[in-house]
Length: 236
Image (cartoon, rainbow, N blue to C red; front, top):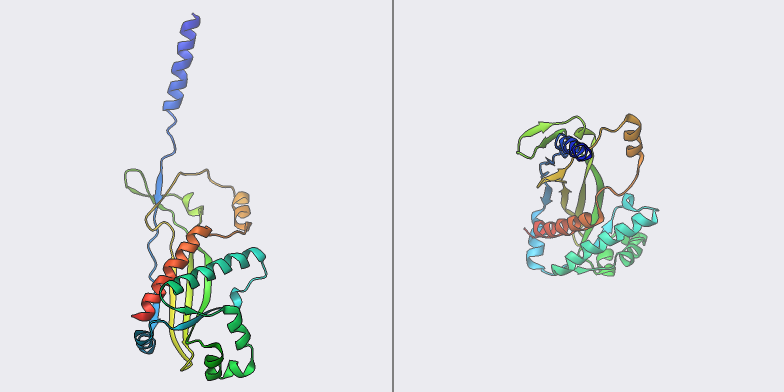
């Protein structure tokens, strides 16, 4: 009797396990976003005859933060951008020294003075860096590749980023190019498992949390790729 009871319990457990399928994987994809590129002929011509121009990377005033952690993260990104410029043959001037020269009123209004005192040909200004571009969708593909929708998925947030540069030729005081590059998440697909639906209170709490949206390693790789593309577009 005892043996029969144990067998019965085993069958019951097996039945429950078989009747509760594991959460199936879902694949979410977002379409890549086209970059916005504008290069003047004068910049392309200048770089075709000047393979090693002297440049300085400046940052827009609105990107300067009092937050110590954000400052450190941004400085790391600036160093990453400058490193890629150096690898491509650009002569990179010191950012802080350049800013000191610019603060002189004579240099601020006279580009000839600025060029002579800074010994710089081009200013590449980082005008925008947004690492919290929100992407959402209620559409996914199941394990069989069939497209489906889910209202629960629509509550989930994926983060992308954008980075923008403008280029000024100091010698002619010419606005010579503007470049906007985008990082879109899950272009090749992200696999996720369905989660329980959040209550309104839980959802509101999640939205209140402030943190760096795109992971640092992905952001750094994006900055590298964007700088390489910037260099190609400037020289084309």
